[in-house]
Length: 92
Image (cartoon, helix red, strand yellow):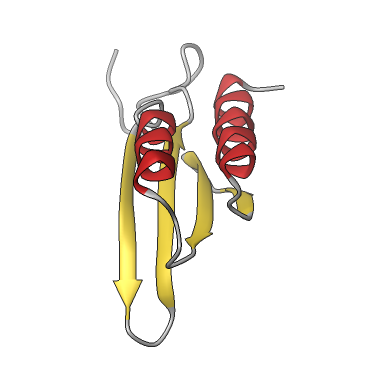
């Protein structure tokens, strides 16, 4: 299993342990984790959530009056180390 998936799954599991419902998705260059945040999340739980999110490459909070609050975190996939990483026009 790729390291990015392992990291994303670990983040999701830790957020679930705090009581959040999570979803993990794979994209071309990253793995993403999203979790809906209830209005009743305690200050202590917020601290735990922020400690977990610090493990991601990027994270944020999307909040709207219509859809509530959604946490997101991104774990980048490793860049290829062999092969044609520069594309067809890359000069060696």
